[in-house]
Image 1: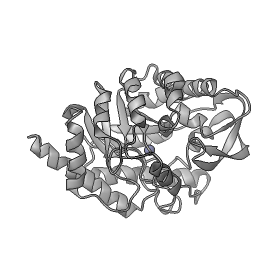
Image 2: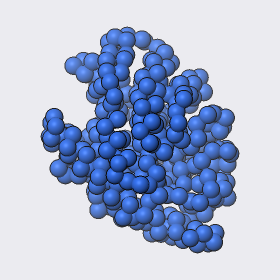
Image 3: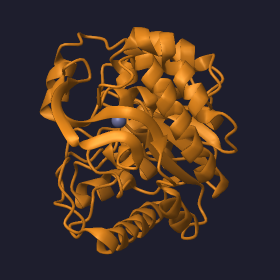
Length: 341
Ligand code: ZN
């Protein structure tokens, strides 16, 4: 019970990109870059094992800004046609490529990385890829001109990739959908439908990560406009509870999300964010334990997975390491209270 995991990313090591910087360019190219990314996977797994995490992601060292790591391998997405648009309902500007033709996966995208990670840890392995709605929101589109249709096309492409990754021995495949917290009507209209298409026929557990974003200024400012209680999840969780996804990864630590909203996810595994990624302050075990205890009022212990609010890529390695240890030791406090080891 109370098995620990993290949302996905860890800080990129200095040999790969400038540390503690969200959108840092790669320091290497070609084979040297791939070799450096494999080193970062190994480091991510090791850091998590040393800290005592139970379910370990590969740390996302092959994902450059946003969702572009995936898109670079998709035909029909033109990276020479970059435009700056407002994304997440114009919360911030991003330079994005343009869809100019029918989309098609050029070939395996993350297979080698998952194969590498699987061979180097005996712990349950989690892997993360962007979800269809978040991809659609991080693109300009001249071809389909219809967000639902484009999302369903991406879901088909994602599903091809996802089936291959699951077959390599993944335990959990997570789709990152921060856009689910922005376009609440679209989640109901086609967001879940697109995820269902993305998970079709998968042999591993499936998760969706829905957060309020990294701790960058645009997100912090946005959160300040959301009022005393953040109730975005209230609309989405009942849809997810009725969905075929197995797990939901959500933000809870230091947030204004009313904890009782977790009760809307009955029947699902819940990765509860018990560590804040928007601050360099390292949580005390007691602070982590407090979030886990409150979540336990709404989620049974065998369905509750103490986790981080979001990815840790913008943090320094030292801070991230501290937060991993806090997550594990805080969870251990609660496990003892429940009479588990
Ligand atoms: Zn997130």
